[in-house]
Amino acid sequence: MGQDVFQEHFFRSSDGPLLYARSYGPPPSPSAAVPIICLPGLTRNSRDFHQLASFLSTSGDFPVIALDYRGRGNSERDSDKSRYTVAVETADVITACAHFAVEKAIFIGTSRGGLILHNLIDRAPSLIAAAVLNDIGPVIEIGGLLAIRDYLNSGDALTSWATAATYLRTLHGVDFPSLTDGDWSDMAKAIYRDEDGVPVADFDPAIALPLRGLTPETPLPDLWRPFDAMSQIPLMVVRGEHSRVLSETTVREMHRRHAGLADFTAPGQGHAPLLHLDGPREAIAAFLNDIVRSR
Image (tube, rainbow, N blue to C red; front, side, top):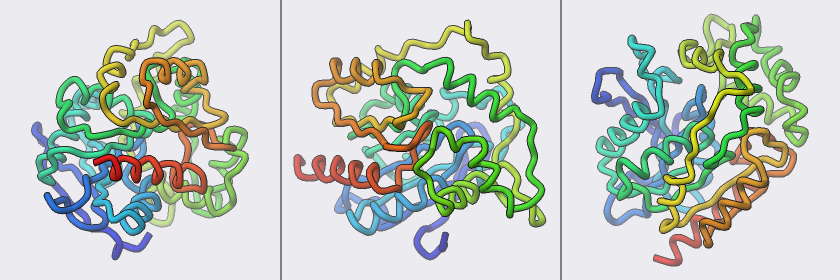
């Protein structure tokens, strides 16, 4: 991941923690294309989007910004663990937009990032020019969340980088049969940071603690009202073929409520699809090009 293809930025959140972002391609400006802002999953970070951001910024000349939420990646950990919430992270996204002088953007939200977009459409709807929801929608399947709970709270620790990719394949291989050895290695580099030669999960462990209380009977929020508020913007949903978080039934209802919804099923992938691989990458590029042509 050569640092020559992106710039690093640090800026202060409204309530204290220092936040980090990467920018790719031309800087956002009135003369540039509408910028793309990438929002990662619950415990993930901007590295998840490195290859996709490089592709979109070079092939489509889009300014691309990828964020680390507080407590993830290079952003500071919050001393108040109760602030690891969608609402607070939405406020941080608004702060990031102000820092980069972005008045309107195309957002790509993976999992937690898509939930943030359902919150952002209520709090700052004028910011969203268009959106891509990566394996997330208004209905979240409890079985998928329970699987994430078990993975994040397993307590397993790696002792060497040599075993990191193999470990991830053991955990997720059933849901991601199409991934190659190189894909698993890339995933490891995105998830873990290096501490004295040992891979360590790159997030504050407190972020995963609320999932411990999940049970099959836990009621989950209904997000159809904020989803319906997206009916007037260009919208795309990417679903992993083997996803246990976003169901085909939910995608069909999303189509019914959003007549112009674009969708793509990522073959051989689960939750959440790697967007830089062949298939989803081209589908997202086509969606973005349609937006540019319609302006």
